[in-house]
Image 1 (cartoon, rainbow over the protein chains, first blue to last red):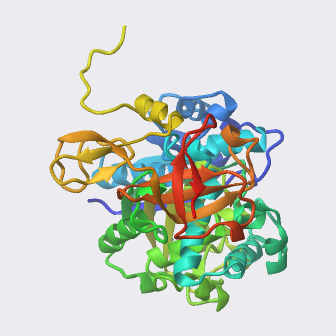
Image 2 (image 1 turned 180 degrees about the vertical axis):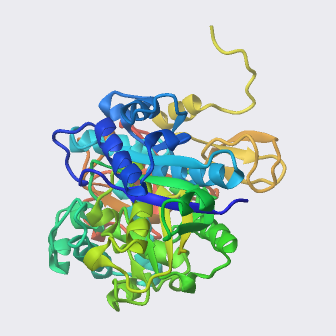
Image 3 (image 1 turned 45 degrees about the vertical axis):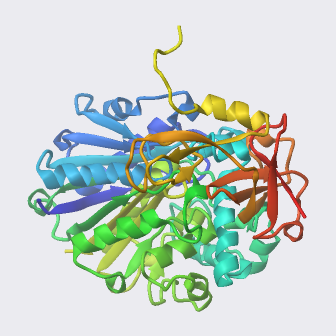
Length: 386
Length: 129
């Protein structure tokens, strides 16, 4: 297996509510930023993998060749990859695999989503397509609903509190203040979270990530190719993927996402590191409880102690392990297919001195964790500064 | 023309017909006895491909729940309601919903529930004493 490097990354237009741009335009702009930051020409790209879950919200499928055409390289092969909210990291994984295996030397990964033009109920319904329609959604489950049921189980088993969940939101909003591309630049308090309207008890509005428009792109390549353009290499040292029963009810344990544990184990083994070696992580905080569960399943804290860890400030940028320095899905935003690629862009920016006030000091090893629905797909990647 | 295949087990269509009539259909592995409600053609426990349909008892207990305030389109006129995860007395776990629950105090983990027929979408449970 060849060594794989992230040569560059870009977000393009700020995440949030795009009034002027369509998804294809945002995707091309993010890709342009990544290509220019890499210092390469588009025609050096040999393949494009696109992470996208809901292009049909814009009545458009087959968006790969559209993006390639906008980039001036219509003959480059493309593929759209859908694994619900993990689509972006699944696309990244394919780039990793193809470069590692020697099939391609230079691959562009683009993630994109455009959803804010549809109304909230329709968006809620579309997002629920990522769950089992017959056995979950049809029975009245919303996306926040399935995570709320996990939250109730976690509260019941470990005593996790609504205040601890609220603190996840407060932290991620604080981090996003220093991320110019974040959906929200708004400082909030625990009180704000607790008093926001109930979406699916115990989850309130400020426990939920937003519907965001957004794109992200990275260039994945070999060590040899990257050296021609930079001395500051960001290596992909671990990659893991796993799944679990699609329908939440059929799992043995509602307080954990087994696919995270399995994907992390694979990634840690490949990287030859342990959870304690990770300096910061971008984890899938689609809901505040999801960040608490993720930090336990990834091995950063003991099972049941994720809530306490947030309370003690251990997950802040200056804490034991910085969790979501970008602002996370909660505050940086959650443009579904772009989310997992955006996490990699954050790692690349952190390791290239472009993270400004949200920089995690002295970080050498970073981890990204991206979840499709309630864990039917989980991708974990580990990076090392070269 | 219908697809030419001989089925040994019920289809999702049959399951949904059952739901409307208060009947809960599941799948059972004839080799090891493992049961689940979502379709399987191989058993996740023993990998046997010998699967049969079973009718499950409509009673069980709540494993976890949430109270939905912002519903999907299918339940737009029903919120707030409880979405529940139920462990059936026969073993399998399923989800469903309970009408007219708006506060967490009205429901708890471990509470007994019974599945009932309804013209409303999805599987409806009710709390039993």
